[in-house]
Length: 353
Image 1 (cartoon, rainbow, N blue to C red):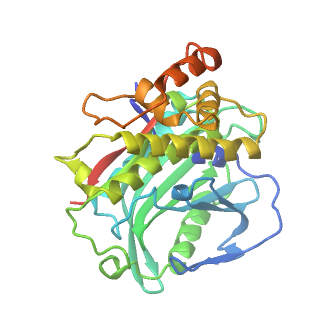
Image 2 (image 1 turned 180 degrees about the vertical axis):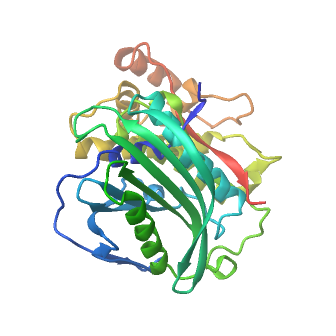
């Protein structure tokens, strides 16, 4: 059983069905990484761009050829301050491992079946400013029947990942095995994308000059969320991001590759969890979650500090000062009886070397 669920699985879930119809063509330019997405990429048409609700997840772009071939391109940083260019850093290697493992999680969830690994290694894509090296893997699987899935034909999928201008740059291209010239068209689309890239120049990338031994923080979420609503996942992602932001501002908390949360850090992260959950509820009023809804009541009533002290206290915490303990006790018995605290996201420390 997997101990941690990969946060980008839920992004891949939305990418599984092959599109049957295309919206109007469009294109855009991402100035932050000097990358232009054209209306057409080799034989594939631009279909859509999606920005994810948590900034750390970045955005994705989709190109398709009818309902036969689909190329999803993801640009994101997971909240990491320094992502080395290329394929050789520990952070990039770890992210690629999670990218590949996401397929196994999808099979566990019953979204795909008969998953097989065919090959993996590195791929060099020639760009306008040099060569960019990607970690690469090739799989086959069958798509399971579900709403929105056009067919369950056998599929071949290739995954690419590299560090590019302080971002992760990930490609997932999938085609039906029955697609005429599917392998050739896939190769041509990937090569065409490579030509769009300037050299990643990792040593000169702004914000990427930290020592290679400097620790970085990778967000992870618990596997109990794997069947959950993406909005719930987004809320917990925000919680983990708040923890990592706090630690980045207080680096003395990282010692011997470990981290112990402080009281104030936990309070700030739980408040961010609630604030993000409120935004998710506005976007989808029907979305509900018992724990997040109860925690929202706590924050709305002004008892977050008391809540953290009562339900999440750690032995090494210093006294947080005067709290309204009696008032919170009475309030909680009336409003959230039988409450069980949850912590479904965190981060882990990754060293670049």
